[in-house]
Image 1 (cartoon, protein in one colour):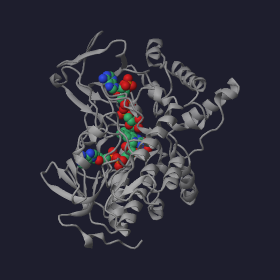
Image 2 (tube, rainbow, N blue to C red):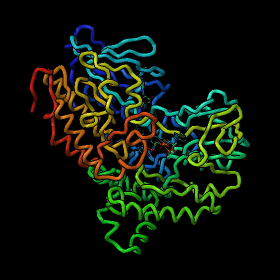
Image 3 (cartoon, rainbow, N blue to C red):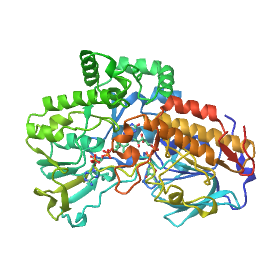
Image 4 (cartoon, rainbow, N blue to C red):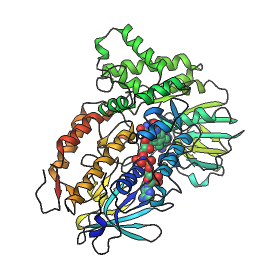
Length: 544
Ligand code: FAD
Ligand code: NA7
């Protein structure tokens, strides 16, 4: 691609063409597109000490991606796809971190980053049409375009338990796990939280600790992940067929590498249901179980109950102690981001693992010795919070972001976070969010690539046409949110309480934070809508 040279026309006081925040999949690819391909001047920030984002922070034992290895990566560079390889069909945290580090090296991305630096404020200067970005180091830089890849599962959630500061043992949140690791051998360890992270950490540490106490609030539906080595022949076939693979992934709904089923679970016999569920259980994968078996598990309560009951039956078969099995068995909808695991329910058959239902016996407080619930005190040496994230907007509302007329992002999002096409907001010109509110709910790297490529194409268009600002029209933004709401209302996800709708954070408004129409439809929408919903330079009514 020929390089643009907007810097020659730089307004007075402008330091960079673009500032990028975040060094995960999103931020790294943005720096590559904007700096290496478009030739813009870019300054990037991350508060970590190196690249990786999610995979820099989440170093807890057992951390694993539940997207299969061959599609938990970038697709944009054929040589990168050919060169970088893997051993098993799922990637552990160190492997993903090594991959992203390699990407940074390969495309020389680190030189644009200032690490260990948090962006604390960013204000749009309406006179100059640029963003003033202030960091916790006291520096302010200006840039015409601001691209934020702050991460949708990145702002740590630690519940405000009474007495947390009094605990005399060690305590860690899984997403702030020390780089040097934690020695858990022979210790009494407690884990609060049994989401995807809790499940992984519980399985991983049970064999080494003296005793593990799991504090579970809501029981989970989880299916086997199906982790196994990947043969040379399989790897060669994948690499040979990558073009087709990415085509399929990007036109599918959840982008997990399988065809979503269109068969209704309620229109087949019980025997056929059982056969299909059993096959998926043996093959592995949470998204495959929910979306690859039947087409209506996430939409039809009867189909949902069939899948849920299949998993409940498995739990009863696996877990030997009937009381533990009872506590582990969920009763409600199967309608959260689907989990998969490497022996979760089996772990509760180990003599050194015990389960406390904090729904039945709530946590009263954290004491100097451990956790006090209504049925007694559990003494611990180490307490692990696997309590998740203030998802989607959590990192945005921590920054003092001000758009036109000094309006803050928190004010703009008072009724819940929104984003036109998951990327932009009215009155916040030239601020492009990667995985912002109302973006696709999928295997994320292909969605991240889709958005970064759209952002980069849009910036290129603006530079080539000498346009100074872009922002969505209010009616376009409203329509997009309505579309997201309509789709969400057709699913059961909106009824399953989880981070997907902000239901995991006390006091957070429960709103539709995703476009649940699938990546294929999202990509079509981007193409069909073009720039129709945008205002350029504010004064122009519209372009295209
Ligand atoms: P992130 O990787 O979260 O990076 C954001 C970066 O921005 C972070 O380094 C953060 O420190 C930095 N940042 C934020 N605010 C500021 C600020 N104010 N100043 C400076 N820096 C800032 N997705 C899948 O598709 N499949 C999976 O299997 C999967 N597994 C996951 C497992 C775990 C444990 C977690 C937590 C998430 C998982 N995800 C998975 C989601 C994962 O977050 C995405 O796949 C992807 O890594 C997101 O990349 P990102 O660049 O958008 O954000
Ligand atoms: P999740 O899925 O939000 O899970 C958090 C867990 O912590 C879940 O079991 C919660 O119970 C529990 N939790 C949260 N607050 C409390 C309090 N106050 N008391 C007891 N238990 C609590 O986060 P994860 O990190 O596991 O996974 C997030 C995503 O990251 C995941 O979907 C993957 O995409 C990767 P609850 O279910 O709310 O009752």
